[in-house]
Image 1 (cartoon, rainbow, N blue to C red):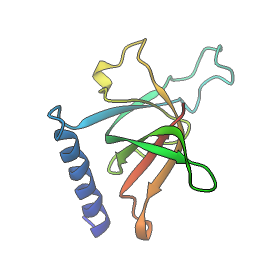
Image 2 (image 1 turned 90 degrees about the vertical axis):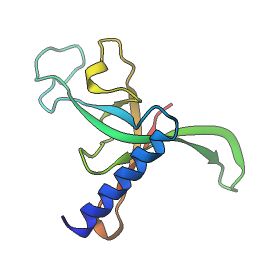
Image 3 (image 1 turned 180 degrees about the vertical axis):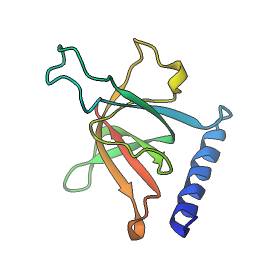
Image 4 (image 1 turned 60 degrees about the vertical axis):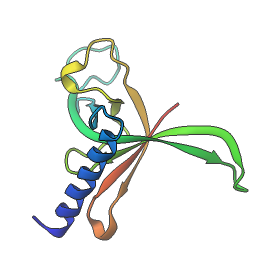
Length: 133
C-alpha cells in the first residue's frame, strides 16, 4: 500500500470508531447511482437500473452563516464518507444509516447537494457530502 492509501484506511478506521461511540456500530450509508444508460426522461423504460454502493460515514450538522459571518439559524446535514470505496457524486442519492440489504422500494434516499473531497497532495482521504434540504 502507498502512504496515501494507508492514511485513507486510517481515516476509515476513525470513522468506524466514531460510529461505535454511539454503541450502534459504524454508520453504513447506501449510495444509489443512476444508470448511465437510463432513459432521457424519468417516465421512460429501459436502461440497466441504478447501482448501489455502501460507504462508512459519520453524520454532522453544518451551521450556515451569512456574508458577515452571522449565524442565520439554518443547518445543513453533512456526511463524512470514507474514501476507500466508491467516490460519491452529486448525481447520486444516499440513504443514511441503511445497508444495501435493507433497501426497499419505499426507502427514502436524499439528494446530494455537494461533494467535497479532502485530498491533500492529491490523495483522497474522505468526502464531505452535503445533503440537499
